[in-house]
Image: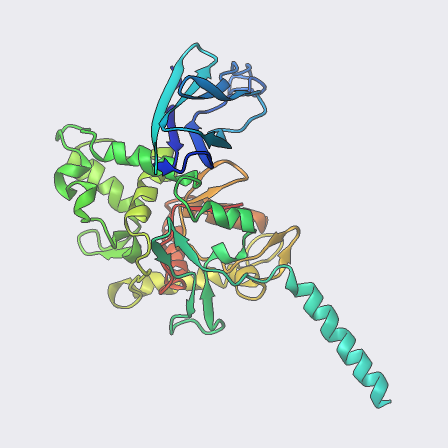
Amino acid sequence: MADGVKPRVKVPKSAAAGDTITIKTLISHNMESGQRKGKDGNLIPRSIINRFTCEFNGKSVIDVTLEPAISTNPYIEFDSLVPEEGEFKFTWYDDDGSVYEDSKKIAIG
Amino acid sequence: MKFKAMTALSLTLAVAAAGSANADPVEDELIVNGETEIVTKTAAPAHMENIDEVMSGWLFRENDTRDMQRDDFDNPGMLAVEAAMETWDEVEGTAGKACSDCHGTLDDDQMVGIRAVYPKWNENAGEVWTLEMAINSCRTEQMGAEAWGYTGTEMTNMSALMSYASRGVPVNVAIDGPAQPTWEQGKELYYTRTGQLELSCANCHEDNYGNMIRADHLSQGQINAFPAYRLKNAKLNSVHDRFKGCVRDTRAETYSPGSPEFVALELYVASRGNGLSVEGPSVRN
């Protein structure tokens, strides 16, 4: 696992059924592109978050492929329809095989 | 004749207005998370001779950049604050202490207002101390730990946490009493031209704030909002790093971060922002 990786998510606590809500996500991560050279002149190996997904009650909301040009601490904001109460599940996939997860419940009302 | 003179005059006015309009500070209010009100504009402290109103650099930034600071979730500087919150409770050094053993948990609010009065005269040391110097003294004297690098990541993170704890408190550094000679030295530095370009701090930040400097807007160079997360290097930047960058831009050999010269300059520049809220960690371009 890369150092200092911490996911953060902001989801409203409740919404009316059928509402569209805005979800903000951010994961602290170096996103080393693999293009840079270290002090010794050798390439620093690539280490990025390469995929991000969000599911609502098991149904896919968004599935993103991230590329090396994306900056440090990737911030992803998107909208989602909320048909019923349930749980958003967020998953980030690291190049080194690590998987970071977070989840947030949302109520109707 | 009269007509001609008037046309010429109105033309000059029009040009002047067009030239300055796009770099002027905006009229806007900063309320963080919908609750913490930040003073970004106020009457200049009495000691300032050439400026009537002091303004936070926030007012000179683009809409998007300003918005990032309205909500802590959107503010990348908050990652540093969170990291420092963990450090706060971490035991380090030979004394087996963490910050929280002396200063309590952060919820105790013991650190509220600390950022606002630094740099500050330290009686025991017999000199003006910046917050960074105080933190390192804590580490070496109280904790028996190694000092942090003056502009290192840990130090800047902790400095961001101190700003966060005092956010919204008006800056109020003392410039009289034992700190006065240091303040005078800082003022001298502020008005001294340096480098091949022969620029003093005042040439840009006093005479020309609100004008363009190449493609960017010149602010008043206030430091109430440091440490600042800069979009250009995607990290938190400490005050002394910024000073160094500015002096370098005049094409001069710079003082080093933590040097007595920069400490004096920090005291003077901080005093120019007396009355503005502590705003850090801020977002700038």
